[in-house]
Length: 60
Ligand code: SF4
Image (cartoon, rainbow, N blue to C red; front, top):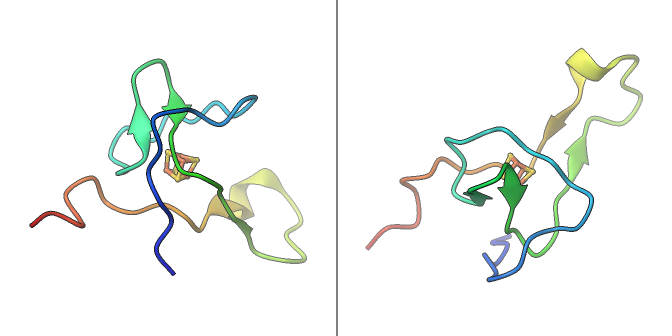
């Protein structure tokens, strides 16, 4: 499912993944919502943002 990119940023979310389509200046995320996976993760290394899309996707 496509998540819309907004003109706002998600309050309280700091993201440094500057290669993401939703990333914006100041280490902010402009996705309308994000999803973190996987269930039953046991540490932060195992978790990741499932909403991530490469910055050059969705062009054209
Ligand atoms: S979608 Fe995920 S990886 Fe992309 S900027 Fe937002 S929090 Fe970061």
